[in-house]
Image (cartoon, rainbow, N blue to C red; front, side, top):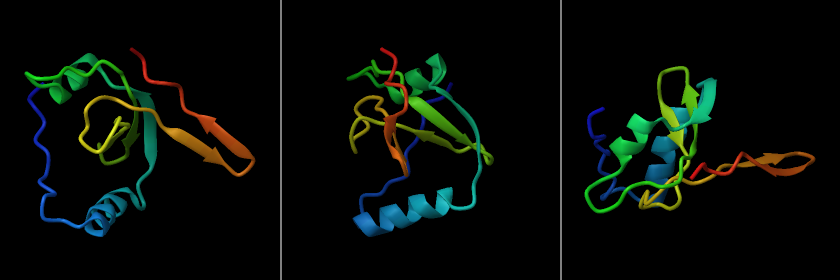
Length: 96
């Protein structure tokens, strides 16, 4: 799998970044929920750091992947939190 190229958000404000992400999600349907594959893990690693935590992924109907990351620098996989009207339940913790 080829290395993933990130869109540069350097000149965007937080609100602009949120708006960009929201527009990519609105109206989409989740068609699969799974963990990141070995190839996808490799594509998110670089020569300085290798992802250790295998995060959950939401696959949207247009092929977009929503990947849980540890922080805004995407240093490793993270977890998702499921907030239900009757309480809070975490999605399964990242696999290590």
